[in-house]
Length: 456
Image (tube, rainbow, N blue to C red):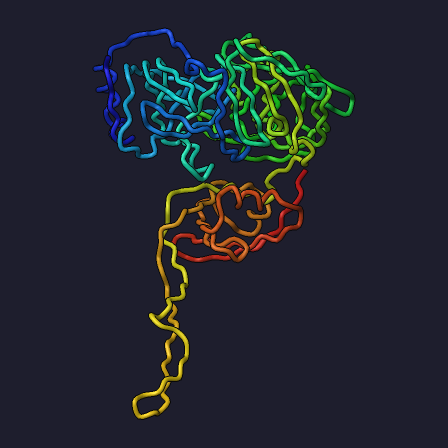
């Protein structure tokens, strides 16, 4: 068995051509995940960040974090996070393309790897390692994300996805029994295009309902993506605005953001749903007659799901998130984690003894024993939050905030006292909310004040 040992990401990138020449090209059937003997099910807790499911995985003995993404057919590793050592087996070079307007992405295809999620193990797993450093979701999440996994995980199990309690349960189809659920909606999953599942829904417009076919995409934090199609009366509403929509494998994606009248999934009806219409340049190669968009995490998290790839079906049951209104970023700012910065904090330093005490000496005279608290500045390494995008014409843009500004304070609180998701939540919170920020721009400190404004 050929083993490529990767010690640090930059080392690999510089020597990719050499690896390509030395590796033996073999193709083996992938067995997929299996539960240990005697196991009918297994439960794994997950983190929910930006509406995305983050699961712990172990790849060839190294602990990593992956996005659970029904929208992908392969297992993709795109960030090694400066891991000291990671072995990938039987490697060869390939290229692949995703959404975006960039060139195809170079990758290494590696076979015969061991991947574990909970107690489920795939002993002959194929991994695609992407070299493009711009394809790294960790800065936008605020913590390390090393890859994504989809079909390779779902194909062997009936998976309970419990968004409200934040766990997934892997069930062996041989032993699984569906419980009667009168409050559930069960529908088929369409795999006509291979490894990616599609579901049917209805898009509500002023004139009625339009039947749409959507990619089930748990790897998208958005609610709904729709593709313009005049023949089907799917058009961008007048009440919309230009915005950064997300990051694809071939670059950043821009388009229009709006709210639609409603989205129907079976008997479940969601009103005033945020929807994104990507510019046509970013969806080249997609037939808008066969697929009308994607159903993302902001909708999916409102349900607890039973995702059944073996029997090509899915069950929706609304949870406590169902009635929460759909929101969008009213500040115009996209913030990302971009390493660390040296933070200076005013700290209180206690003396070895403290207080004021009267004591008597041998002669009986009273003397004072006084200790004084001292104050000074302490230094530490803290997360660095940087402005990655500023929407033109937005409240932040009008106030003067620029791309590349580094956040120092938000509403009077040190920026590193927030998590990245906490900062983003402020920008989604309520119309008219006052936002005060202090930033560093090329070594100069600047302050800005703006108010969240309703755009749609």
